[in-house]
Image (cartoon, rainbow, N blue to C red; front, side):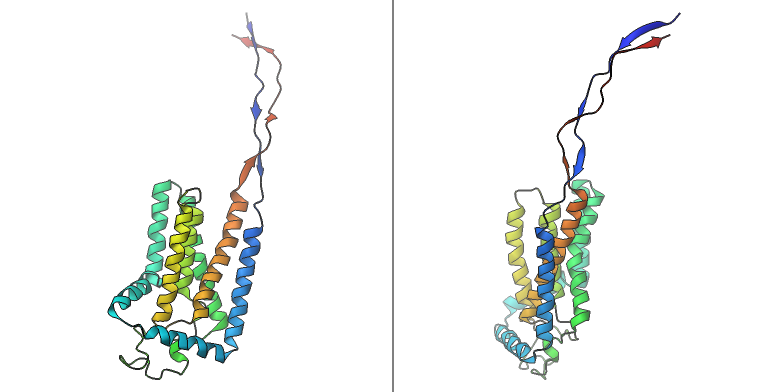
Length: 258
């Protein structure tokens, strides 16, 4: 004989997730910055007079050569160079993974931190601007103690934009927008990071391997690219909750109990 028991399923209110498209201001700003970088590159590429004016700025910085400045400049050159930057990206990404227990967040940091450098490399290929050593104003550039005793001898047609400045900018923004996005210290990171970017930019001109427009272009292309990438990340990930909805309405019913 079966025994029937009355079971009533309670109504439940749930919040249905809905996708919220983030503001397009970062996207538009990023596109504007990339376009501005391209415009600067085209102007510089077709204006030899502008390069000569910028070269004089490098020479002026060259007058401050001193052991107390050479060390920090060479240190920044190594840390934010190709090998140093890759190691720095991997170490910080690993720290994000272990500290936040999120491989996805670590990958996001790695991509965000490196994307500006990649775009800078693409623009280098497009514009092929000669470095100061190839401008012809400093024939004894490789002789220590000559008129332009640069501490490093980078040559080639890949001055614009500055890769060191671009990777520094990308790293600072990656820390602020990814690793510390919801931290009150994010503003402090941006301020401190801005000083670091300026220091790297000045060191590139101090070492005689970049012009002013190169380092400006590096900061602009990295910022623009990171803003666009971050907008797409947020567009994919941002989920808000709509007003509560009743999931189901059930009525009491009898179920057999054997």
